[in-house]
Length: 54
Image 1 (cartoon, rainbow, N blue to C red):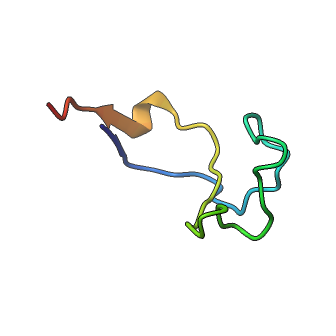
Image 2 (image 1 turned 45 degrees about the vertical axis):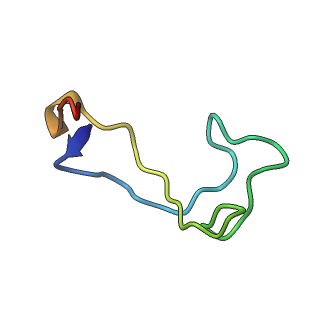
């Protein structure tokens, strides 16, 4: 699990992000299933901690 302490530049995705799949991305900030989505800048290693959940 990642516990993120600081998020930078949260925004609605444009569809031009690395990993945006052609034919699956939809404008408006929601997935095809209606779940809200956002994009953030890469998280600095000092701004998160990693924990096992099992």
